[in-house]
Image (cartoon, rainbow, N blue to C red; front, side, top):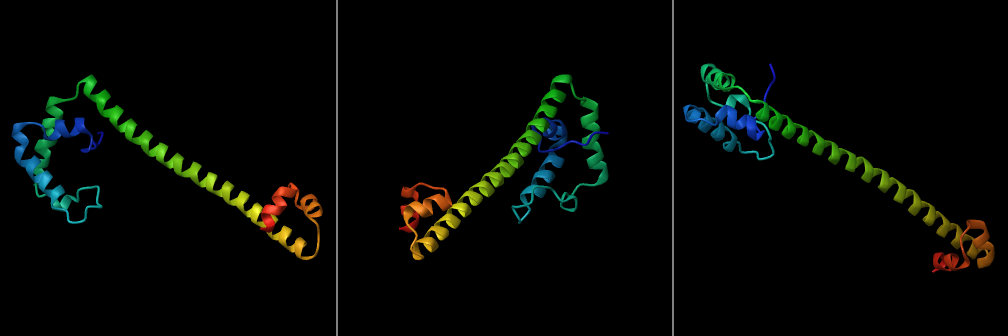
Length: 146
């Protein structure tokens, strides 16, 4: 048996979208809206105050009316889209971390060159000598010494 995601529009309509299931829909929505902590993205079954027979009835309705090919495709497409979106977000985080690490390395090297340039300048080295040692232009040495 395939478990359905009630946050998927197609599944929600199939489970709760007929007048015979109005009470169970109202109970379900009350259980969602009655949560005090808005950070929850799930329904705790103990707060969903319907007995086993009523839940069974909702699933029997779902099985009775079945799914046509188009509804199954829409349901699966929504699920795939959500999974793809989670993947894109995760990949963006990974890419962002890589960029941040690379920027940090570059900034660290620049800071190190600045410190070396300042130390060598304090020892009396010229900008030309410092530029050769830290492998930057004389203008860059001047910027490091400001």
